[in-house]
Structures are given as C-alpha cells and as structure tokens.
Length: 476
Image (cartoon, rainbow, N blue to C red; front, side, top):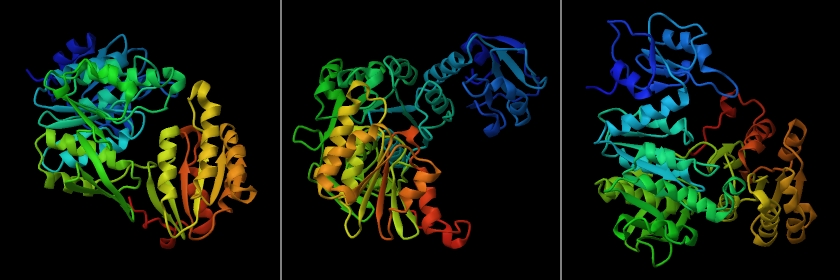
C-alpha cells in the first residue's frame, strides 16, 4: 500500500477525520506548511508559530490545490473540498510523517550533516556531487530543525536515490530525535567549534550534542568526522573503526587535505597527496568541506571524475562566503552567522586577498555564554596582530570588547566602532569604504550585517535599478 494513501497518513499521525477527501481526489504527495508555496496534491500542515498561525490559511492551501490538511483546531474556516485530519500537535504529526516516510523508502539513501559551522556549504557540495549521477534533493536554505528536517525528508520523491539533510541545534537534546527521524546511511560532522556555547554548555557539550547524530546511524552506515577533534573522540567509541572516515590536514586523517591554494575565486586542493580537486568557493577552510563531499560521493559509488564535475558546479549559499561585485568594490558577504571559528576562517580568507585594501566589517558573535567577552577580546587581538587587515569596522555592543586590542595593534586610523547598524551608521560605514576595496561582512545573524550590501550600493551604484546598477558581477 502506498505511503501517501489518505487512510495511511491518518493512521501515521494518529489523527481523526474531520472530513474525508472526495472519491475523485487523487492521493496526495509531498508536504508544505506555507500556503503561498503550496502545490497541487500536497498535504498542508497547519503549524501555529510565534508570528502566524497556519490554521488561518487552510482555505488558501485548498485553493492552491492541496489534497489534505492536518490541523489542531476546527474552530476555523475549513474547506469542504479537501480531506481534513485533526491531531493533538501538528508539529508532532509532521515528525511522525517524516519518520514513517523514511522507513517506507528503503532505497532512499539519507545523508545527514551537522557541525558547528560549514553545514549548509557542505550540504551544497554533497548535493552537487551526488547529482552528477544520482537523482535526489537536499535541504533548502538552513532547513535544519524540527520543522526543516521533516520537510526535507517528506519532499523527497519515492524514486529518489538520496536526500541530504542539514541537522542543526542550539540546545541539548535537539539532534537526537532528528537523527532518529533520518536514520542516516551517512552521518557527517563537519567540525566541533565554539558555537551555541550558551545553550550547550561548553565545547564538550557541543561535541556530545553533535555526536548524537551517530546514535541512529543505520547498521551499514558510515560516519565522516573531523580527525583533529579531541572532544569528539569519546563519542566515536560507539562505532567500529571501519565505520568511521576521518577528514583533516594531519597524517592521521583517512582523507587528508593537502596542497590547498586559492586561485581567484576558487580553492584547489589534493587528497592524500594524489588526487586533485577544485571548488568555485572562497576560503581555504572549504577544502575540508569539499573533502567530505568527495568521501560521500565515493561511498555512494561515484567515480572521481564525476566528483570533480560536481565540485566544479557547486553554487555557494547566499550570505555564506558569497562574493559580490558592488560597483568598484568587492564584497565577501558572509553575514549569515558567526562564531569564533567561522569568524577566524572568514578573516583568514580576507587576509589572503592581494591587490586590494582589505576591510573587515565584523559584528557581535552571539550565544557564547560566559566566554563571550573573552572571545571578542581575542578577536580584537587577532585583528591587531594579523598585519593583513587594513581597516577594521566593529559593529555591536559585544564587538566593543575587540576595539581596544585591535586599536593597540593597528592604530586609531584603522579601527572604528559603531554600537549598531542603522540608517545613520550604515551610511557612515559605507563612506569609510573606497573604490577597489575588498570588504568582508561577518557577524551573527541578528546583527543584520548584510544590510551593508545595500548601503554600499547606495554609495557606489546610485541607480541600482538601471543596468549599470545590477550586481551581475556576482560570482555565485
């Protein structure tokens, strides 16, 4: 019996019929929570969130062609022409559907990716490689929580060969149920770093939480993990050594990244001093993420020439090391998020730039708990000592901790601090930028540093609606 039969779906979510679908209604396929993006035949799950309530949009979902709706309440407008199932919790129903669907598709290879940074880029790299031969899909944007992971699984087609799921966390116990839902054939931990320390209680807590992805690895599954990561090692004992592939730059790594070089907007590297690869992404740290994609591709049967083609075709994710041309200025928009490790990686990318004045616009790194002031102070010390950053613009209250250490190393003309980013300060920051500069934007998401792209457009591309004002020079 098909998983997508209405009675099967009702049983999976342990719900009750409010109204059964009509006799002429085709079996649904796929799930959505957004009536604006609904497609004919999908199941609409009415989630109640902080800002909106999906129950207000059941009628719109029906008009878009949804075949079935799952609701918690019936005191709202419910269309008579689609099936409606009532459940205790729509979010729990979404998870139940994903778990059951995963179990109903034994030929679907699930690759689950977690880590302190680099998750989304690694998902993109793996998907680009696997799609060279196989049919499948991957998480969109950062769909990595209790909503995003089940949606990624449920929108995989029954005939697909693979799906790549990003799995995130900011508090203990979040990854384990998502791992149980995915039952990964391949589990990836990109790295263990200083992210979400406030919620996870230190680097050991981060390692414990990320390692919980391995608890539901399928018996024949394989784990890709960082080689140089002492906090993770105790949690790998649950797996036989032959089920672990380590990635790193040291001699102990199974897949050892060597000879990393940057050529324009590409990174070239070798694996185990033998096989050469390249990626059209900024940042030498991305060679490690690409090495994971090589390993996953080989695991799923791809030849190295197919892997190379996939890596060369990858497109970087928005606001994650995204290189943009804004008039006479190059912008490295890495403003999606930041922690001390990803901040350092971004700054090293900027420091390696040649032929331009290097400007670092960096802001608060959030959720670092008791280490927050110290981490920002260390950031300032690095900026002051690097010798490769020409101008530093600090944004935010926490970033003030970096001001004095950076000032000591760079001097007053090369360091600026702004308490916030708004219309006035954004314009002032943009006026510090000169034609020919390369500018890094890096901060935690709530800082909203991507706004500086607009501020720079106003300064250097006065009429951005004209052909001269588009950013067609963006590399990806």
